[in-house]
Length: 178
Image (tube, rainbow, N blue to C red; front, side, top):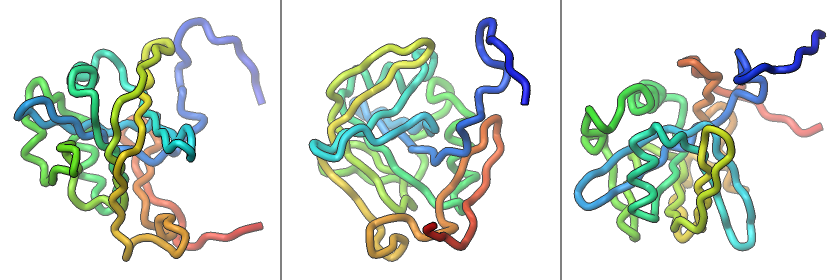
């Protein structure tokens, strides 16, 4: 194993991958946009808080700052092509609102086909380097129960995984506990 001290950005900042992308949905007026964010995390169970990191370069970033509410949806690996397309095109140039979706009770757009989704109200935004962490309070949860196990987890082999730079996969079909 070798060690090096980074001088600027890491040439390969994917050591902590794969990750499950959260597809961020935001609506401002009639404009709907979706943006997959692999840098996402649960932050607290009580109260339920969830965070997504977005670059200020992303169209979704500006919409979310104005809208102050958003959705985060989680998708099966069978939706890889759609999630990849949403992450490869800019909402500045393409109307991503054409993607199949529905509006949650708070009016946030939720991409169809998810096994779970959160409706979130924006609490805080913190800048960390080249990304901003959007912290949302979960105000609604959507679940496709047939795709979840008895504890509410996605069934083994279901989730879409992202390895970075356009590489996707899925987890093994079997799960185990040591």
